[in-house]
Image 1 (spheres, one colour):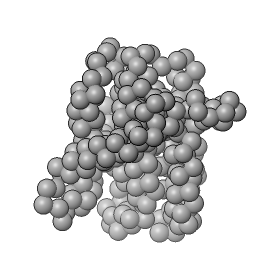
Image 2 (image 1 turned 135 degrees about the vertical axis):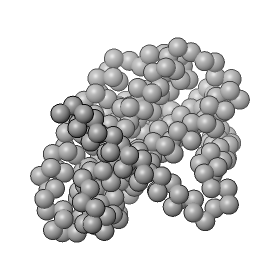
Image 3 (image 1 turned 30 degrees about the vertical axis):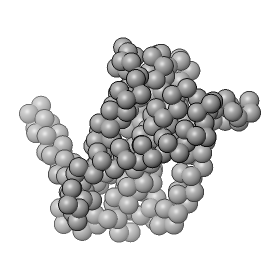
Length: 259
């Protein structure tokens, strides 16, 4: 029984890795540099955006380029994962019908693809940490924990969005507006202290800001994130995964009928 279970998990992991490989190859199919752009593109963007925003906020935030970059890579992970996973079921309609693979395989493969791209992005990010002389600290070991929180929250959102997109395609446009609001409420490129007390309370409830704050604390400032940050991220992880899975399970049987 255990061997069967292990075999099933191995096959499941293999399918996800194959789907991820397909997504990455498709993304860079017409590019001469191919996968190198996964490192080169974020590096160039990091340099350009750091120069632009440094002029605006350098007086208010110490080591602003790293402040901005830390927020940007976490935001991009969530944005890419949830946005790409939203259309996963519709995009793979043929495979769903012919191969009869578990539906959530396609959702998870999109999230995993975003994680792989995030890994490539971390290469220039580490380079920028060295350039701007951010000294290594023990608390940096907590960074993967923050990424894990980001993945769990992203998966929860992805289940919800992918399911609803099957029945209501316009959610894609509505979600783009929600993402824009979330980004501006995540203090990616401005100091949260510049906001009023009431707005700071609102921002502190935003899960994406909490993820970004977690990363900045352990990477930039060499501090263990505050207990309230851990607690709220834990709550958001449970809520997002719970709602996402619940909606997916309730509508799972109707998905194939609608597709």
